[in-house]
Image (cartoon, rainbow, N blue to C red; front, side):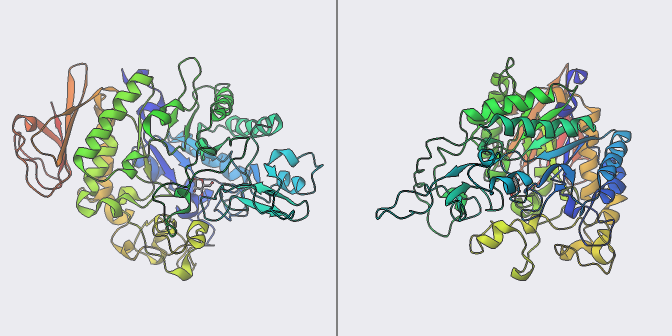
Amino acid sequence: MTGELKWWQSGVIYQIYPRSFQDSGGDGVGDLRGITARLPYVASLGVDAVWLSPIFTSPMRDFGYDVADYCGVDPLFGTLEDFDALVAEAHRLGLKVMLDYVPNHSSSDHPWFQEALTGRGSDKRDWYIWRDPAPAANGGAGGPPNNWTSFFGGSAWTLDTASGQYYLHQFLPSQPDLNWRNPAVRAAMLDALRFWLRRGVDGFRVDVMWLLAVDERFLDEPVREGWKPGQAAGGMLEHIYTQDQADNRAFIREMRGVLDEFPDRMMVGEIYLPVEKLLTYAGTPDAPLAHLPFNFHLIQLPWDASAVRRFVDKYDAACLRAGSWPNWVLGNHDQARFRSRVGDAQYRVAQTLLLTLRGTPTAYYGDEIGMKNVPISPERMVDPAGLRQPDVPGECRDPERTPMQWDATPNAGFTVPDADPWLPLADDYATVNVQAQDHDPASDLNSFRALTRLRRERPELTAGPYRSLDTDHADVFAFVRELEGQRVTVLLNFGTEERDLGSVTHGETLLSSLGDQPASGAPLRPNEARILAG
Ligand code: GLC
């Protein structure tokens, strides 16, 4: 049965933030050779694919999400040869490799934008989105063409003084939006996909997939009710003209066409939308779009058993109806580390949930050893989202991007001891690190490995339908995964009370987050995640 599933359905995806995984050059920034050297560790986690956040040529104003050459590797990370070696080593270890494709915007350093800046008559002018200033009451230039905002704060428009026109950027002014309505843009961007697919890349994470098209009337967006100055810029407007526009699907369909030119490739789209809209990004059997539209709802929901159960029931059913494969995420390079969000006591409950629900889990580097958000002092802050909105809590993404903690030596084995890592290491690295946890059967690391091992041993955990169970306790989420007469029951205690679940707890314990093997029928302890056979 699992044989019928594709790798991106049965597998676990592991996200690597290349700057922070392993530095091989001693400059304090992670790189491709570093990642390659650590791939045996990644394979030891029992994951199936690595997704690398952007490695392309970039001025790094948004740490690679500002691409200056879609077919080049940034020298900070290495060379194309280093990349080929990484892919070869990953494939030798049975790991798929996914890259981060950033189609919505390029860097302002990209030669296309530089050419567009040469004037209205430039060949590349229409590769970006230009508008005249708004009409002004007294005949002068009236400022930005409309009220659209950048996710990182301020207007989404920047004036090019030479031509007197504004260009659109939903992120930094140095990240101008590409005009996907222009066929030449699409052709060039699709060729970039082919370039990497020919080099053996197995798939892509597609950046801000739901923002690709903007409404061509360029009307003001309504201000969101309840939004107050001082809150995150991205939440100020109802993005009715810049998000989830119908034309997105046509563009994604073309990307899908390119992926389908190659066997067994996939894409997962970054999309922050409610379930019904999210699933439209998977397309239909006749016109498939993204293989997986990222489901970020576990990040956004309150950490509450009833709320989580309600959401899982709804999403799982919606996926079945839509013929779409589910997927789950607890964290990434834009979101607080989930251990900091749910707390130490609930950390393994959350990890168990991620790895036992029906659907593809994506795990973020370091979460498997229990890394937390690292407080960053204002002097060390580098994330443009944080620097541009210093007073908005949670907008700075540096705390979740700190270097991987490999061992207890100075700089945690991430870089040479005398280098200055690009972001500071967590204070706890002397105890929270791979080396300390590797051989400790009770460690977070080995509890992660036990979960991925169980997924391989029990096909019902990948291919089996999901069904939630009613219990008398609002702080317990219980569900079964069953396939061809084999069944596991997953019991998650989100609370701090012991819960007697009666017959639901009957069965052999396959795993308990508390590290022991409670007898059949034993009550669920506070903060316990237990997986039972039967
Ligand atoms: C996505 C990325 C984020 C980046 C933004 C602009 O949301 O995940 O890191 O800053 O797009 O590319």
